Length: 277
Image (tube, rainbow, N blue to C red):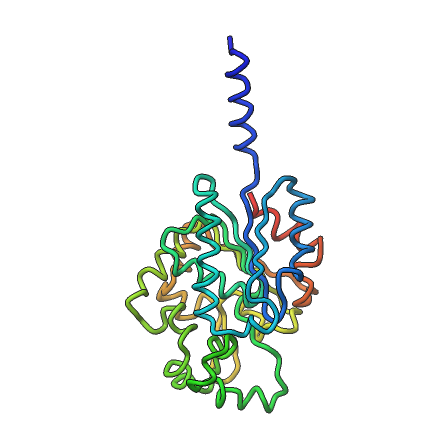
């Protein structure tokens, strides 16, 4: 027969077992924590008592600061959160630019506590007038241009040599250019229980929209599917390993614009909440 104290302990353990993990949300470019409040509210409405950390730094124009600077600073915030939740771990959501930078935060943090990482439209490529888009590399692929986050991940299929020469961020976190951190960049991403990649053909901002799933253009602007891409076939950051072990989830939703992914209850309920255990 259980004592009263024993029953209380069992109830507490059961409550902890069914509680939802805390969530860390990383906002997109030229916005900030305020833009993610609907997502925060919906999570807490549907998953009561969930602790949500809405990343407040690098909002507005400061989101254009150098990508490595943002990543390393965000990592300090994530470390504080992981110290608070070292036992149960947390889930993480990165929206737009926050999907890419959030992923890099994990890759540079060997002992991170993130269980599930949800990327809402990774690899933001801002829409420019066609003439500007064709000539953007002339600014972005310079030492001066690399002071901005967009330049750090601007990937021009017609100027790959310049991309590899000047880009100080994307070719490294993708292990396209090997570095002393390449093994860590791969191993820390594979610590995840799940990597969830979400995107769709009606996004209207991500170019190409399939880059949300690590697909990209070749020189003739044909999209190379994920499973034919070097980053997958060579397993550069562990995507192939994650998929073969059932931990990579690729989600496609039609009729969702870029600014609706985190503001539409149907989308949040169907493709985000099921992964926030």
